Length: 202
Image (cartoon, rainbow, N blue to C red; front, top):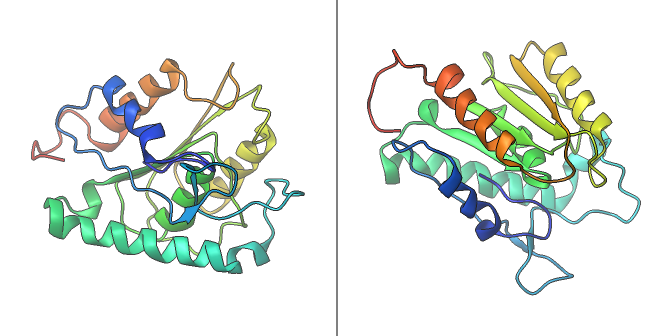
């Protein structure tokens, strides 16, 4: 799971204690760039002061976006060698800016599923793997950081590309409430790895 802008891996690692998936191993990488406003914060890329969360195609070419994309892709591709778990049984999730990176990288890899929490697309979705992994999008109706419309547009872009999407809105702000954690768990259990699927470790 990928953290958001200005947070760090520990910020989302605590969520593992509230998700009952005992066969899963969890990974929480830190973003590569230091956050300019906090000594412990990290970021996948900096956000301009006038950023609107409705991405332009050129934003994908920003150097920090390109470097984060490359590093994250390399990390994901290295996991099977270190864990024995193939990408086809790996779920990539992200909160806020981490959700944007989840879409940026995850739609081009044969992952089991993607989870985008209070996220957005930092550039229009273009190249995707066929078939693309299923995507869960969850967003707060009162989110004052990433507008709800950004999530709705993300859902529409994915659907237009033929991606299987589960879209959910919650009465919350820019956060991950217990109801979202419950949804994440059920999505993984019922959609990604149903009860009759093989029982090898994940």
